[in-house]
Length: 371
Ligand SMILES: Cc1ncc(COP(=O)(O)O)c(C=O)c1O
Image 1 (spheres, rainbow, N blue to C red):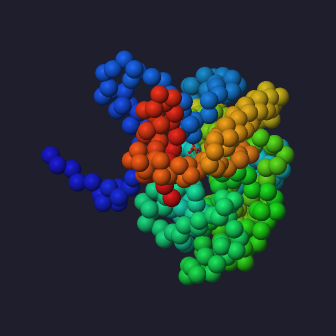
Image 2 (spheres, helix red, strand yellow):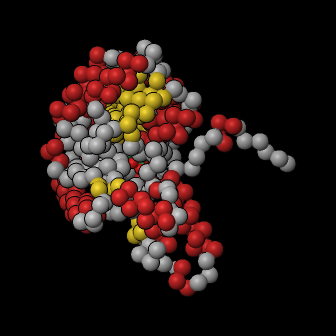
Image 3 (spheres, rainbow, N blue to C red):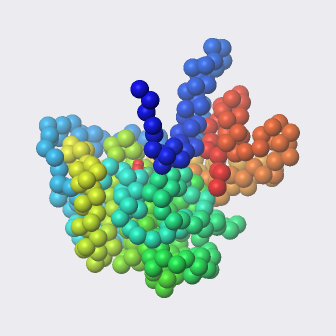
């Protein structure tokens, strides 16, 4: 039997970080030398290193018997808890009916791109998850390269949007940002929102790293600045170290009643609802408690120590530049000063550099930046 794969799928590339994972596995299995049995320093995967908060683990055990399908947008108790969580941490008044729960924000962003008409504006550098989705959906898109400070320049956004013919444009904003670790200030968000209002740009604001902001008082949600035009996505994956639970949520813009009905149709068609025990387990993850507060504070501080240490060590090497992270578990390093030497060693792409760094005696896993 010969199977023919749809061209649309053939055209999609495996994400760089997963490619690296495969490379690592193959490297280990193909190599019989004892020195190949190494562990490695992993900076390549968006995996939080902490345990899942105990209260979430306990709730999962307690709710293992919940075998019924959940309502499509999520169970009411969870949507209520997420609403209160947003009020407490992000100072946003969001009624539970604006909140839809899904199996991770990656899927929810995909679903939003499915229902929203228009050309996508993707600022770069960007998390490597967006582009394959945009391509798979055959959407029109334009990259918006950022300048030296690696943040969206509002003038560039305006010029690009003015050139686009679509009556609606979709900006993918990622704040705090993977891979730079940078955070947008309130003023920067306000300036972006002004352009979006003026030129009818809808915003998908991926805020999955919000809780990891080192100085949490500095984080401002785009949902607060531009509530009538922003879809905010967030979830358990990074802040609660529970990527494997596959639970995220999207907050719909104010007054988007018709759109919610369309969205519900898509969710019902594609996955019915998130696993019911996982939804119950997530409730204490969004309830306000001293235990959770303490967890966020401790993990934030550790991210800060790691981010600042990595930044200072990297930039102490002559010629290497890096973004100074204010959040997340990433920074973007620029090795171009070493391009001539690397070229002599036949290292001409960042992908190749990441493969070589794995094999090198220090065994360091990083993701190449190709865009
Ligand atoms: C910027 C960004 N958005 C979304 C995701 C995916 O999150 P989820 O686990 O909620 O699908 C990641 C994970 O690496 C990410 O880095």
